Length: 343
Image 1: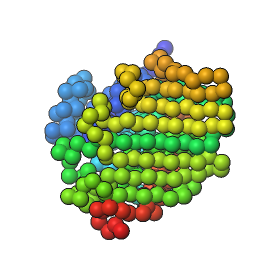
Image 2: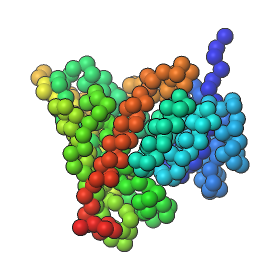
Image 3: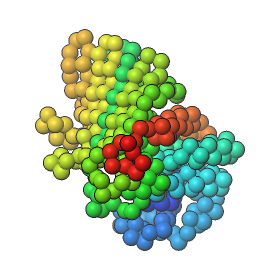
Image 4: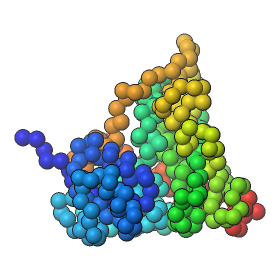
């Protein structure tokens, strides 16, 4: 007799990443039990995409339903950790969009409640977990294709699209800062490809160079990291020009002692169409690797972890370490340009 699917629900639809999170859980075999958000317009648009799931009137209808095992969210960033605390205290596991929290105080509370409840608090780092080329690159690195990893560079450029952005996008207390927000992807990838759960923030910078009319918006950021003999650089920005075919030319470079890999996640300036472009250079050759058939295993493994109370999709320590590093970098960052309080 087959096992009944795990039921999940969504609370907070403020970022479009929620569509990918729900789609991933459905593809992994979970059952969508319903959704809720305070904003009627977001509920309406979401309902058109997932018409089979019921719209609910209050988050309590989800939190107090014992048949629902998972809550996923892409609410306003500053509200994600408090929601996750409520979810875990109601005996459910939590899968949240990045950033998983917006302050070190929030992280401390989440860690405490996670220990007390034993529930899963996982951040959906989509730039790794939803990128077939990044999944394949990690397999190659783990198999020793480039030798010992020496440096990891992650680039996360984004198109600003300011006219369509909600008010919280311009308020640091709500979005957490550009490093907390976007660079959480790059820090997650640094830890994963370095094969470590600890690292040191050497330096960090945030700035507003292009948008003086929005002094609360950080439009550029960088972090320098080190873990043992592995060095890291993350650069993120809101400068993607309109001429690019997509929202951002996300890239990952992993340098080893015997070669290197490059991932062009969303486009290839060399002219190839589509996404998930992976290149490997070693002692024998330079080649492009087709990633079209690479499995995205996260959702399947996450659902297995919910059932078995294991940590195969992402360890809790990795999740919290990535959050802590990026929050530390954000708190320590040198502030430049047109930002409030910058030099």
